[in-house]
Image (spheres, rainbow over the protein chains, first blue to last red):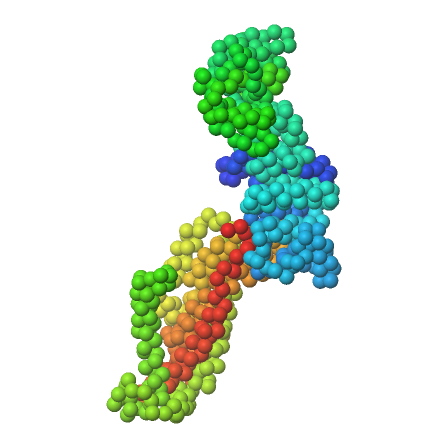
Length: 360
Length: 276
């Protein structure tokens, strides 16, 4: 276990600023997930922490020790790569034990540790095989084995599940979660898949264009997004966004006009500030916070596509004034495509964002 | 009809068979005539030999002084291949992995060194070697031939290293390997097919080399197989049978070497390294 501290960490590739100066503190045994769209700098950040890329400025501290300019081996970190990066000419046993061999560990001791790692990852039957004779999931387990055998202070995972099929991804995700529990290790995990982030993380770091947008627990990010980017990125299906305007401000309630839904004002109880009347805003509402109500209330919407997932369905509807919304339908009913439903936004569950994207 | 039996595939096979026949016909002719006396060759060069008596080979072995030539050629070729493969693989790794700003200039330099005729360097080199007392030294001559072969070998191996996923280097660094250990334990074993290709090309070039060896390997004791054959041609050219046998003796070792290394041309060395 170890703490990780990033202090004003910055990375430039010539004139391009890939990581803008950022600070982050990861506690002992914490599972932190870096999440963000492609090109946001999350893998670069991981490579900086691993020591595979030189830092442009700032500091990286592991357990309080400044490791900014140390090579990977002196940082005592282990990394699992997106594409496995197994040594193809070595057997599974040699792959897992390579780091120990480099460290000069005697063969007998090495074998013992490799066997132990193989036992944890259920790789014992495959120790004599070469990577090309393994399935994708087994290869990824070998890559994880190579990491755990070193007993590092810090585990780094660079999108380790992105090359696996859905079933295997689910299984391996559980294995990683269990590994985290068993090893009680500090883990940094990079992914662009917010489902992985939500299910694995103690805390999620949302990145965009080399900047940290928000850091928090999965539910904090889901329930209390700091800006429109985080609100849109976290949660599946994506949050619905509508253009709106502040029409009236009272003590505990703000009234807004949403031209794309229906004439009239909507109540909004979640604003943390009191913007001036007339301010243009973006209203965000999750699919589960749009409910069906009786006739003559709310706004009408025509059902387009319906995604049935078993316990839940998602109906993609279009309002009379052209707004497209995704609505969760928990009630077991068969929404007919083309039918009209009357919906309303739950006033205590909508988010308002300023034109700059910041939460209001 | 399976793809391998389709008309275009059969045509391609026929064409390839024809090319193989045309390529091998001269060799076959040399082999057949190596067992025939001169008179029989003159009478009908395409006839099969009456017997497989090794008389021509015995005469050629003695006439070409091949016992000395074989040792020299093996030493020369072995040294050249070793020096070329070691240095080109060592150069190829950083040239492939590091971001080299002046890479185009480096390429130009390599191309220049390949295209500039060696004759331009012969006189100064000979002068230098003579001063150093290295004329006739097979190892010193091997260095010259290795230097001639290095640019092309470096370019070939650099391209080969580029096909090895760079993530393997990263994985090795994370595992605690130094760049040297990464090269030795991870990259070099994966470069084997590339190294074999370079070894074959360089071995063929060196074994058949004439200009450099005739300049620097002077005296009977320094003769290579090629030089021995050339010397033999002066006195025995009247007997075609012996000359053919001599040619066979010269080419057999290099063909054996090629066939031996051919087994090591392993495709897909990096299979399983990364997700394809």
